[in-house]
Every structure is written in structure tokens, then in C-alpha cells.
Image 1: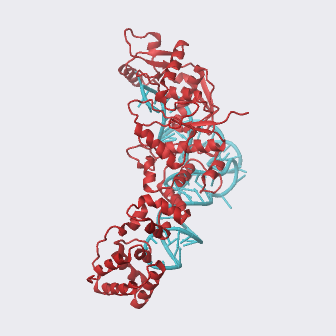
Image 2 (image 1 turned 180 degrees about the vertical axis):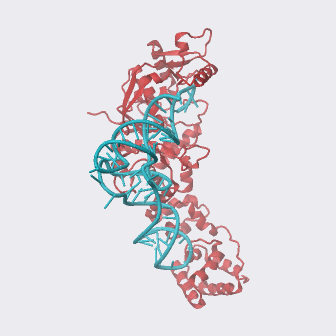
Image 3 (image 1 turned 90 degrees about the horizontal axis):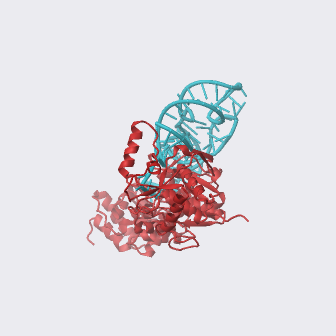
Length: 462
RNA sequence: GGGGCUGUCGUCUAGCGGCAGGAUUCCUCGCCUUCAACGAGGCAGACGCCGGUUCGAAUCCGGCCGGCCCUACCA
């Protein structure tokens, strides 16, 4: 019987949860679900300087919001707990000690300044830099602070990438690298493969930035006598819209919290992310999550990085919004419209639905309901029409159809076009040039408020 | 500097030896009270560049150029 699939993501809580994490999480979950495997969340918090517990919470919240739930993790435990690397340091230390004992790693007493100097020297001589192995051959005396360095064996590392095929790296080009920092914490290159082995991870699915890291980790796995993961998959990177690498400072789209705040639906975002770097080979673009699970395969994953594109996401999100039922959409809108009661939101849903590509836009359409628009200056002819509207609408039942019928009648009587008739009306009611259909501009407002705004604009005392 | 990955409309992509197709954006028209949605149509690519193989190259080969990643006591 085949060993059941185990995959993981290992985000680092050093800032807000970001898009790349969602993307790799998605691919991991897709694969895990397809293979009926297990999805593990492991928190990579070995950078003591930059870690913050609140960032860990943000990762949980964002992934849960997206519906990318994990089977094992720091918050839920599991057979290989703990799942926070900061709580696993004893294990790394033991493994590092074992490597030293076996002559596969050694203590390095070099100071950062000395290493910097070595690097600069190599740079000046236009020579590829590798650590000099000073501490292996001739360690300085009388120093107590040390890091642990892996002694890179010569030769070649080969592995199979599910996306890119056979990979080959020459280890002679890799210098001895540090696996344990002098603060006693492991470096990513060390902690990650150790945990993957200990946690029996079968498939490592991660961003392309780790492709060149793989030989480092494979050498460690071999040196420690672990079994290698069955396969790796290095997903293409998501680039910023300007084609550069995503940066936290310059690119807001990196921050996952933004999507929730702006009113993107989790399924729409997931659908978009799936399409960024992968395609089904058919013309289908809209997928339920289950359809994605079935359709997804690594063979059809793109090899090059893909730019993030708001326009396509907006379109997709609009498609998802339009598919929602009235009650569903009303519920989704609720958090964006705290000024309105449920009944008003429900009334606003039908005309709103086709007009949004993200939920936050509802505010742009509806804020006239809780803020008083500036009364426009009108010509006397227009004011007369306003008075006619007041008369036409005053005794009408407050329903969109009835309001519309009354208005249509007033338009005919006025002899001007609907456009000419409705434009100032819309302005008076909402203060906007773009708004919901005119009957809804009325209907959503309490009747007395609507009439008040008309009176005021027409210069009629209340 | 060294190693790795990569390059098809603005963007996401299909095609992998035989007319470069779809989606999105944009534009036009229709519907129409604005804006959307919806329907119809359109613009947009010297397939990164140069050379080779071939009757024929986006596709195969070679060189070059560009982007990204790794080359950290970051992950």
C-alpha cells in the first residue's frame, strides 16, 4: 500500500499574511485533497528578531477566510507536534550535533565581519564566493561563540521536480553553509528538511524561489540518513503588476487582508490564484473548489512567473458576486454596510448585484442613505419638474415598480427626455452622477427623507 | 561574478513541425434614466533577438539579450 500523501506549508510570521502564502497553500490543499492526503501547517519562526505572534494569528485568519484549512498545525496539534519550529529547537540541535560527531558539520567561529571581508575579497577578485573553510582547517583559538556549518560534499545533486522535470546541481559550486546560528536557532535550510523528514512529508510544494535551495536541503537529508521526499514541485512566482518582484512596501496586493477588506470573495480569489500559473487545458475559467481539485495537475503548471492583474480578478469576482443568491449576497454585504439595517441591505441587493466587482463598492452606491448630499443649484425649469415629481410620488406606495411607473408618467407629462428628467433628480437624491436606477434611489431612502431632499432642492418649505 | 529557472496580444494563457486561438482590459454598436449586467462586433502579437535545420519553425538546434531566484548567522 502506498504511503498516504502528506504536504505542508511553512510560512514565516514576520509580517502580514501574503498572497504567495495563499497561493502555495492553495496548491498544497488542491494536491492533498486530490490524493486524499494530509495538509500540515508548520510555522517557521526561527528568525527570533523578526517573528511576532500577532503575525502568526494573521496567517491563521487569512487562510481560514480562504477556506484553506489544515489538518495538523500549531493550533490544532497532530501526531508530529509541536508544529512551531521555535518549539523544536532541541531536535535541530541534536541533529546538528550528530552531523558534527559524524564529521559532516563543524563549528564555525568566524565573525560576521570576517565573513563579510571574505566575500568582499572574492568579489574584488571576480571569483565566485564560497566559504574558505578556515574553521574546518584551522579554527581560531579562544573564541566561544560559534555557528554550525555543514561541510558540503562534492559531487552532484539530482532530483525530480513535478513541474520542471529532472534537475541537476553541481555541489562544488556551493560553499559550506551555516545550519545553526550562533543564537542556537537553526537556519531555514536546516530546519525545513529536518522537519519535512520527521513529519513524513511526501511532497514538497512551494514557490520557485526555493528551487535553488533544494540541493542544500537534499544534501542535508542525505547526510542525516533520512529518506528524501517523493517529489518536489516548484510553483511559478506571482509577480507584481509592474512585472517586478512583489514587495511589501510597494505592492498592496501582497497583503491578504486587503482582499477581505475590499470585498473579494474567497472562492473568487482562489479561482484567480489557481489560474495564475496554471490552466486546465480547456477553456473553462470558472471553477468551484471541487472542480479545481479534480482538474488540477502539476503537468499543466506554467514555468514562468505570472503578473498579478487586478482587472482579471475584478472580472472574476464580479462573476462570483452575480452568482450569489439574494440572501447570500446580503449576508456578504453586511460587514461593509454597518450604517444600514438588514432590511435595507436586502432591498438594495437586486440592483446592486450587477454593479459591483467587489463588495466594498456597495458603499459608493449607498452612502447617500446615511450622508446628506449637497443640494445642487438648479434652474427654475428644473425646480418646477421637481415639484411635479413630488406630486407624482407623494401618494405612491413605496415600491420600486410603483415609483418607476409614477416617474415615467411624470416624464411623459414633462415633454423632456428621461435622461434630462432623471439626471437632476438623481443628483438631488444621491449627490451622485452614477447611482442605482432612479426608482431604487427613491425606494431605498425612507419616503419622508426622499421628499425632504426634493423639497429642499425645489426651494419649497417643508 | 557563479549556478538555476524563464521569455506567445497591455495582462493571464492555448498551441510544442503545417493559417497563432481563448480570457481579460480597451474601443464601437445594441438594450437603456446614469452606471453596470447582457447581446453583437472590433483594436491589439514582427511568438525576446540573431543564425541554423527543414518544402515549411512560436514549436527542433546553436548563440545572444532580458526578467526572476539562489549564491545570508533572512525565509
